[in-house]
Image (tube, rainbow, N blue to C red):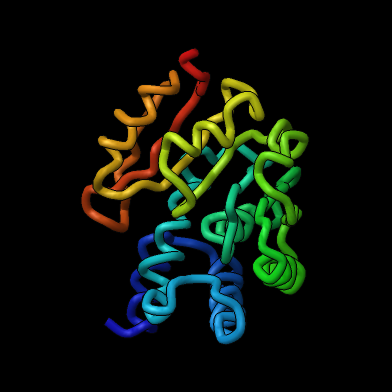
Length: 211
């Protein structure tokens, strides 16, 4: 399937507004432009950016639509944080904080946010140095960042217990839940991926260390 066909299929399934579709198009164009000089996504996935990255990222914000203040950790090329910001653009109180320690990636994130007029704040810091940012979160997201065990450590004690964390995971997410449960207590809801069979977006709440 060509990129044009993949774009058409993703947008039809997501049923987004024309303005949102236009912003997604501009985001993809900027990603392709910057990818030539900055490694934002795996090179092999670039021709399938719509089916691999955009479609996957469009799943997050609708899982908790009442949240206006999102914190995306390890934002990289902006998936899912920038996509969530695109979906929230124009809504009162919307604020998506992107936490990324790489300077070049932060420059890209800021460029997209500025050109698309998104409700985004980019924090060029390590996650452990962003407790003040995370304390304001109404929802947290992460994609392709770390194991569930490590993700729990990144957010524990930095967010309110009732704040949901949405972590994209592959087909082995059941094993990751078991591994993380050895060190952490949490409640988990598994939302089946709309993109990859067997994958899921895991919703964790009440994360606390076992010891």
